[in-house]
Structures are given as C-alpha cells and as structure tokens.
Image 1 (spheres, rainbow, N blue to C red):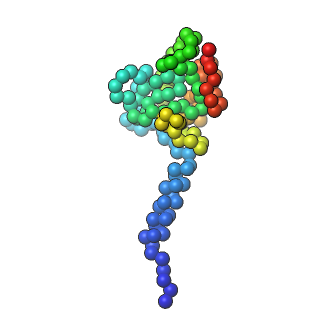
Image 2 (image 1 turned 120 degrees about the vertical axis):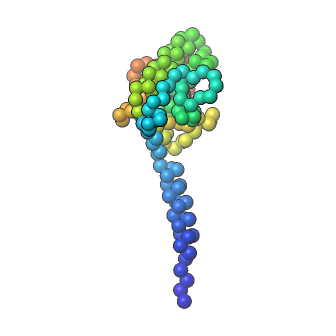
Image 3 (image 1 turned 45 degrees about the vertical axis):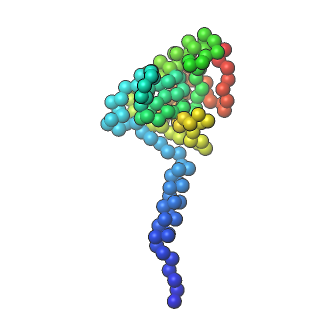
Length: 152
C-alpha cells in the first residue's frame, strides 16, 4: 500500500513559500484610498504623528515613519550651518506641497526594508515619477549615493 502525503502539510509549505515570495518582492502601496486621499500633510509638530513631513526626506504616512530612500535632503534638526538649515526648510516645505498634490505610491527600496533607525525605506512615486527626483531637479536634495555628504 502506497502512503500519500498529508495535504495539510503541502498546504502549509505552499503558504510559507507564498509568504516568503511576497516578502522579498517589491511591495507597492498606493495612497489613494478614500480615507487617505482626504488627509492633508503638514510639517510635523509634537504629539501623535500619522500624516506629516519631518524634513525633506522623512515623513510619517499612516502612522509609519518613512525615509525617502532615493534621496538625501539637508538636515533641519541638526544642521551644520545656516545655509543647510535654509535649504532644509525649503526642501521640507516643498515635500509638503508634493505629497499634498494627489495620490502616490510607496515603492520598496530593493534589498532593504528599513534603515538603521528603523524607518521604512520607500520611494514616493506619482504617475511613474519619483517625488525625490523632483526635489533633486529643483536643487533641494541629492540622489542617494549610499552615504551622506556634507551640505556646508
């Protein structure tokens, strides 16, 4: 008599493989749901943060802290000089404008989900274009090159 494998074991293995495949593929989240589309982003201030912009490359979306993975923007919390602070303020204001212009997608950064500070690494995309690239083209950020460069 030939023994057949338990179907539930095969189902569990298939489920695990499917879950792993989803985890390693590049997830995309579209912020166009009815509740999200009506959210207005502003600069972050103290308190509970669900939808606000911290600086030119960091924001909170739906309670998750996001680091825009494809750019580096000047610091505003600990700038090294006055010109870095001024440019960082302009980048922050412009990011607020950009995220409020309509639905966008959060695309995973290939090979890495979070940075060393626990922020989700994502590229913000609208109509196939990176919002980070817009900031770079306007001189308010740099394309991420794998490490921070001084702004002063």
